[in-house]
Image 1 (cartoon, rainbow over the protein chains, first blue to last red):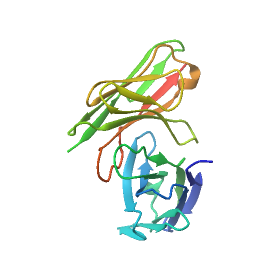
Image 2: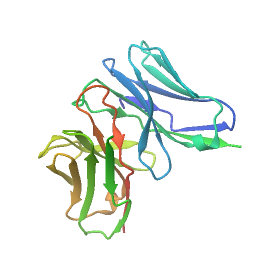
Image 3: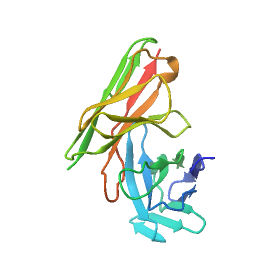
Image 4: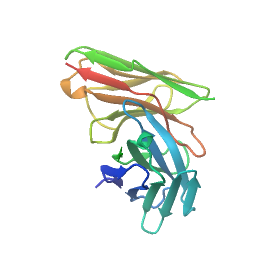
Length: 112
Length: 113
């Protein structure tokens, strides 16, 4: 099976909260990332969390990490149509010699 | 600040023709460089990575090759394109130390016809 797993699609109504979930298998992961990909563009780093943290909040974004269950989530409050994109979860160990492992991406669709 | 340039943005090539996609990074030295392919619904597939000039590691055997002629230049090539080479190709770089998040180029949409 894949090292990082995500559901492929999520549909929410504008103004609601979105929660995108991710599970990973490598317990030695040091960093966990969320990337956003808008149509036809590259990936942009949204936020990251160290493996020794439980939660990180950045404006409308909240990242929760359950290290015991190897579960990562991204909550977007007050979701807007501009949030429609593909969201990738990724994990890696510290140091550039380790190759980050990406999930398959979750397509978030925000409808009025 | 560091930037990554990838070109061309779109490319339509006939089957059997050669390919050359170029990626350059500015504002850093000795980055780790990566080529990914993104097919619809299949996420990111790592094709090649490089930890230094002339050092290329291939993750998936296929019709493509990569080269790193200079520290901040990464090239993806093919001698003869196949229909199955169509996809969205992304170049990325990472620092060798620290947080090491990946920074991505804007991608190249390749259509082989």
